[in-house]
Length: 123
Image (cartoon, rainbow, N blue to C red; front, top):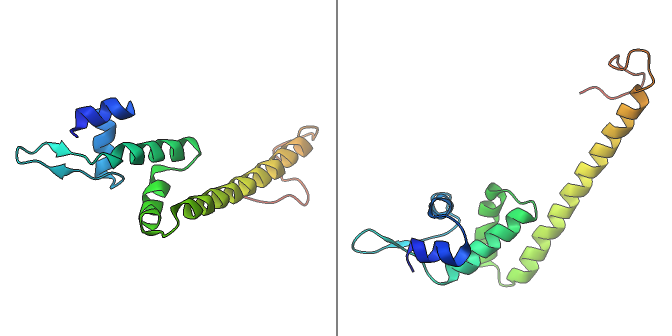
């Protein structure tokens, strides 16, 4: 299928699809007239990319993970593992934000809230 058909099928712009191709996220063959020709499976791949982005994965992370998913004998398990890893990252960020929140709350009543609090961490 050509890029216009893929754009219609995925709801993405041609520019976004070209960007994905430049980043190595999707692949296209070139026809004799130079037009991009995408395999039908590209629609599913674009859907995966969009879902991964909605779940908090960056395009860099998605690109890094695609080869492992393509080569995996059990892609469902590979995706589940990636999701579990992402949950662990989110849990660490939540813990860091909770610690920062607590430090901010401790500083609110201080006479000089920006002074280094005793026993607080330094950044």
